[in-house]
Image (cartoon, rainbow, N blue to C red; front, side, top):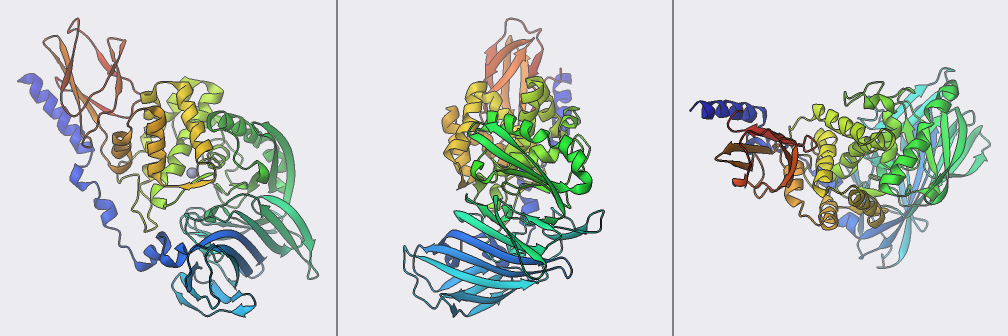
Amino acid sequence: MNRISRACITLITLLALTLPAGAQYLASEQIKFTRQDSLRGSITPERAWWDLTYYHLDIAVRPSDSTIYGSNTVTYRVVNSSGIMQIDLQPPLELIKAEQNGKSLDFSREGNVYWISMSEKQEPGKIYSLVLNYGGKPKISRRPPWEGGITWKRDKNNLPFVASSCQGDGASLWWPCKDHMYDEPDSMLISVNVPSNLMDVSNGRLRSVVKQKNNTTTYNWFVANPINNYGVNINIADYAHFSEVFNGEKGRLDCDYYVLKENLDKAKIQFKQAPMMLSAFEYWFGPYPFYEDGYKLVEAPYLGMEHQSSVTYGNGYKNGYRGADQSGSGWGDKFDFIIIHESGHEWFANSITYEDVADMWVHESFINYSENLYVEYFYGKDAGTEYALGTRRSIRNDMPVTGIYNLNNSGSGDMYPKGGNMLHTIRQIVDDDEKWRAILRGLNRDFYHQVVKGSQIEEYMSEKAGINLKPVFDQYLRDIRIPVFEYYIKDGKLTFRWNNCVQGFNMPLRIYVSGVRKDIVPTSRFSTIGLETEDVVIKVDPNYYVGTLNMTGK
Ligand SMILES: [Zn+2]
């Protein structure tokens, strides 16, 4: 009697800490979705009929009146003939003219979307171009990078310091485009005209610098690889520049650094972590995915963002996240969070890109996890483990990690620490470090420069691990409950099961019976294993992100 009542109290405490199963989707159901969300978040027929091949964004940025004016030339291959094209551009910016082969096209506006009427017949298989002239005062970001827009600031010499950031809100905040992640141009030219006392740093390689007559200069940046919308960026300042060459897995990688002149000395010290990052992540994930475009770290007037081949940096030249260790383990103080985390996204975000933001875990879970791999690479496996377990303190289990598909809806912020700990847990299940590293490198080889559904990543990992990981992904990505390993010892046997879990949850688990390792496969039904003596201590390996309940209360 006594034993049972104590077990009940523990169980009630546990249940109080986790929401009941029925309440798990409540938070996401409360969001009201609009037609604009569907237009933004789905592959509409007006998007599906044309396949992007090339963008030439050609703009003048004027810090004096906070305006952008210019054009985007969109080149595409017709998939199937259609008469209406969807182009996204958010107010207060306006489309001024749309032109094909010198002829003006009619268009109408519906919120963030322009419907362009194609006058020429669009023949399947053929390539066409469309010039979109636009301009105005783009939205100013009040909380970059969490809220998208343009940031207009000044450096210590009172010179303009300007940058774009648009993850989540979308690139159509500042330029007209197909603002959905499923389609990327094969390459892109970004031409940015700025006052001649400033320079622009965008993505890819600086192809040319052209001085204009009106005391302005145009910087032409060419991206030789597919690029996602929110990866495109402008950074405008009176930059200082230094560079180095990293000898990596695919040869010589040009690394270029652009920082405010006032921070040059600090940057030369802090950015020594960039080649360290490249060594660690090439080891775990394979070659840096954009050798052709080089790697850049660019100082920006906000915290930072994973802009493809021009990672932006604003972490104050301090280790940690704004100087603090997010894991509380001490290991987070050993590296600059923004250099490591945002650059890690070159592999998971820029090379392997989610198709729907509902699967944003593909970017953030792997990159949260990469922080622990970085620590492991330089400080050993125990250090990496301490970091991973430390990040659990910010898991909320408030909503599922995955969002709602086709509505431009992302899931819980748990996609970072919980997703990272899910991957750390899967590594324990694989239980073979070389195989695990081969899976991480395999993902980057087989999904190189691809847009993916989360399910493709899940299936790939199951296949390569040789273990059906679907119940594990269902549990940690699509449910908010943390599985509880329940056990008791009686009649010379250890009896155990999984509880508080999805149906069919059968994750293998490593436990220690008085210090002796035992690999078991609990299910939601009780199973037993024989014990030599009942006087044992059961310990679940803490690397697994699970709860434990001794049902006898011992
Ligand atoms: Zn991130």
